[in-house]
Image (cartoon, rainbow, N blue to C red; front, side, top):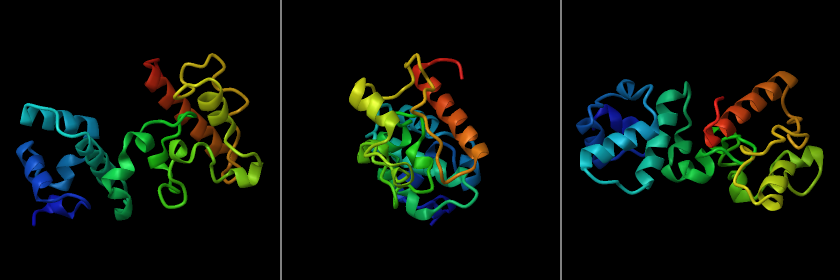
Length: 180
């Protein structure tokens, strides 16, 4: 078993493909994005492999870029578009420490987020407005962004809330192609 097989979810076939693309160590994968790896595999094969391979590469990217990756979070199905793409508010569910055990992701739970226990309500106000009200995938194109529906997470500090909001807005702008 080669070093790449120490990455959870990497079997013989994926290891063989990564080696064929020039990646022989875990360190050689650092700095590579899942999209880059998927594009390289498409070029190597001469066709587009199943999208599940992209999800697997997202798990690889998480593993190699994390200081202390949780092997349980390296299952490819946790990195499907629903969790890896920004949610309506711009948060990336797969990046959250509560994902997937305590929370399955905003799109899956339809905005019924854990922190409602602190703020009340039946559904996240951003999700309710964006998805159920305006029938949008995310708030990226909304002229009111960010609006009063972007509430503070009561479980973290004001500084952390400020950082989270900046990251969410950056993610939403990336989705719409606007400059961050």
